[in-house]
Image (tube, rainbow, N blue to C red; front, side, top):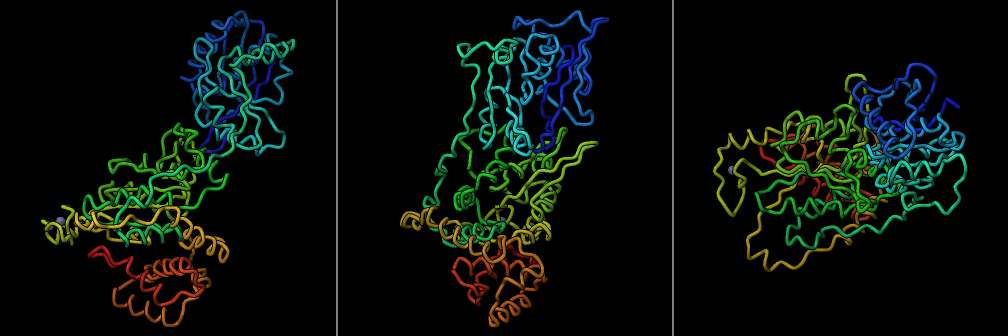
Length: 511
Ligand SMILES: [Zn+2]
């Protein structure tokens, strides 16, 4: 047999389309031609495969005219993930392994010059694609990648350490069970561990108002802006927010882990954990929302189903902040680069934090602010109205005097808050099939159940504060969440009154 076919997969964002590696050996002037890869990668892949075969004591068909084609041709094919299937194709076409036995298997893995297998990016996304096809396939991956892939239920994943470990499984004559080495193993999908306990809200003393805002944000899926002087505990609060959210289901966990795997950041300890991404304010728009070629997910996608924490919010580049507007509305981000286009999920909860003014102490009882009203206005003005408008809750985090901190009793534990959050979320889901922050247009009126007195109260407040219709809608959604937390079907005056407070923190902005 001088033609062999080996199945593999490319990566396009989170998609992993099938790729067939065709290897043809012919008589003629000896050559090694690779079709379907970019120029530089062809050269590197050729060298790795040739060297790995020779160093592993296998025969490289150097007296043949070798043609390798990666089909379909129009897929972007990056990295060395096709080394292993190309090597196996060469071995099958030259009769060193049994070509027929490769059917029903898929392979991905980069080869070192000695034939060791090196982990590949995005193993989890690759395994997710296996589930969507009709014929179940078995997949071979390098150890180090296979463990990730095995998290996907209903897949059959094998891990290998060396090219020879794979070759041994596909020899023309079945070698029998006694040749099983520890370099080859079937990975069992591991049952998800119980969510580990992160930092607890009980560690934060005092700060009743910001904690209440955290609970409302978690219950309704609302974005939250924390405004307070340095050292008041904004970061401490933000780092505890993910622990208030209900546990993820397996589908959410798989999607979130697949993104981390694409970025090469997944570790099994993160499985079923809601991530908190906290990029620095010097991050570029690309680092924040994703980009590059091939397109890579940014921090907002790494925070998918978790929390995006942006400290020093006004210090981020304007372009980076404005790029957040689309995903905040849609929960997705589309990245287009030249011929490539990728879409990544980015349904995160935004927690932003900022000082009230450049020096940090405006409105503080601890220290005097040195800023002029003009400086304060300019600082807060770095955040555009449309962006601030997409953050439903704004709350002040005051610095507490030391004596108050010393005598404050321990705060309520995260698990108690999480239970109330889960109950409120279930209420909203049962009523309208989505969290309150996602209500739009007519849905707000349909599901609000606003009492007459509460409507009157909001009307008066909105007129006095000069609110737009959009701001009023935001306050109504927050009021709906406050009522859900209270277990109330109707939204009353008390719920609306509390919601109004969460849009009055920043001076000079009347949204
Ligand atoms: Zn100041």
